[in-house]
Every structure is written in C-alpha cells, then in structure tokens.
Length: 348
Image 1 (tube, rainbow, N blue to C red):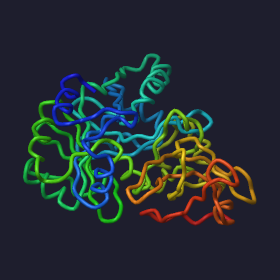
Image 2 (image 1 turned 135 degrees about the horizontal axis):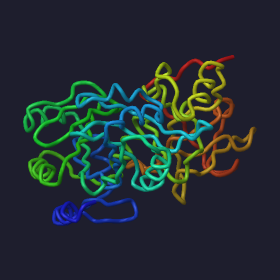
Image 3 (image 1 turned 45 degrees about the horizontal axis):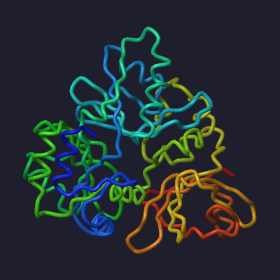
C-alpha cells in the first residue's frame, strides 16, 4: 500500500490489524457485505505487472487460461502451476495500459515473482511488484452497477468484462445470492475521488468483507499455507472458466489435462460453515470420521451470524460419507453449504 493511499485511508478511519484492516466496526462491515452496499479497501491484494513484447507469449506458456483473450475489455481467472500440476497461485489477470496484471494475495507476490523470473531467459518480458503503485478497491451490492454508471458513465455488464474509465480499470467479478461485484484498480488520486464520492451511499469496509464475499462466490485463493497443495480442478478452477483445455502447452498442463480426460478428479472444493476456536485457517486439515484426513481448508473468514465460513478442498467420497470435521476426526463439524455454481458429474 502506498504511503499516500495509507494516509488517506487512516484519515478516513482505517485501522490496520492482523486481518489487514477495518473501519470502525468489523462485524458491521461483514453484515453490510452480505446484505447491503459496500466499498472495500483491498489492502491485502498484491499486484504483479508483466510488460514487454513477449509478455503475452510468455504468460501463455505458464498459465492455465488463454492469455490471448485478455484485452482492455476482458479479464479472466487463471492459475499458475508447478510442473507437477500443483497450484502456486490463483489470480485474476487483466490489462491496464501497456501492462498485464496478476492480482493475488500480497504474501504470494515475492515467491511468484521469483518463480516467473526464473523462466524468462531471453524472452522480452519484465515482471515487477506493482502492489504499491496501483490502489485496489472492491464494490458490491444491489446498487453497485447503477452507482458506477452514475459516476463513471459505464459499468461492466457481465462477469470478467472490463470498463476503463476516469483513470480506473473496473472489472466485474463472480458473486453469489444476486450480489453484483466489481474490482477497481487505479492510481491513488482517482481512487480517492471515488472513495469520497461514495460517502453516504453505503458502508466502507476492509478486506475481510471482500474475503467473505469471495468465499460465498466459491472463488479459490492460494496462500503460502496452501501453495502446491491442489491441482486446479480440486479448487474448482474449471467451473469458473479459469482453465482453457484447448490452449496448448503450459507448465503443469499434462497433469491438468490428464485429470480431466481420464476422469481422475477425486477432490473438489466445498463451501461450509464451522463453529471453531481457534479460528480455521488455510492449510488446516479436514477429516472424515471413517476415512481419516481427506483435505485442507483453502480459505476462511468470520461470519456475522457466528462461526466461520470456509472453502475446503476435500475428497468427494469423504464428504459424501457423512460427518466432515476440522483438524481431527473429533473436531468441529463442517456444515456443507451450496455453491453458486454446479459441480461436474464425477466419473464412475
């Protein structure tokens, strides 16, 4: 977070903490995210910028999605895998100006930069940490589209669509329960103007509110604790159009393709609620009373109605067998909840 933007947020009442920050009342922010209109400071988001004549061709050989389809008007979810097909990161990829940006948790930026640079060799592409150059905001709620159109003149109409306006890159992202969500990126002055214009129209919120909305929407995030834990299909990335199976070779492609064409996916990502102290965290084990350890927590956030809402990657057979518990077979029970998208049929 740039010094200019941090100072602006602190003057607006932002309080930094272990969850990256909040405004006045964290629980109120979580409730507003589910029931009303919120403008979130996404201070936990990091950005990697790729530039150069070979940026598209280089990324095309590394990522799970078809990078050639990313334009100033279209973004996409994508993944970056090890040669063994294990996810190092899930992120939104978008174009802003002459650069291509990978949006992912700040804690993963340094590791991913190091990995990407390792394979550049003679390619004409450079990678940089742009986390402090571009401000990230999240806007959600039933009036979000109308408000954006009133202040910017336009708003993306479909998921993954992008509008470039007033110095801002505005992306519509997946949502649940009829919510409409947008991520916005821009330099500090443009974001300050938007932030000020929002006054009186809804609730200002910290990144925890956005994390809860990501979980409700079934969007996977890879953290340090879960790097290399999942192949893309385990994290439902194919259900979110984050994998292109026709694009050709990329790092880990053989494993990802084999998982699809041989029908070997035995795990998927579930949404659940759990009552647990200490709080669940990415990487925590998930157990079945009959099968033992069957998976891991992928993401977690407090829920305003109590407990925590989580995304858990787990064996399909283990979930269908009955009780699923956190940390051990006698731990708190995960109550499985529906996702806003359907699962694929599993192979016999």
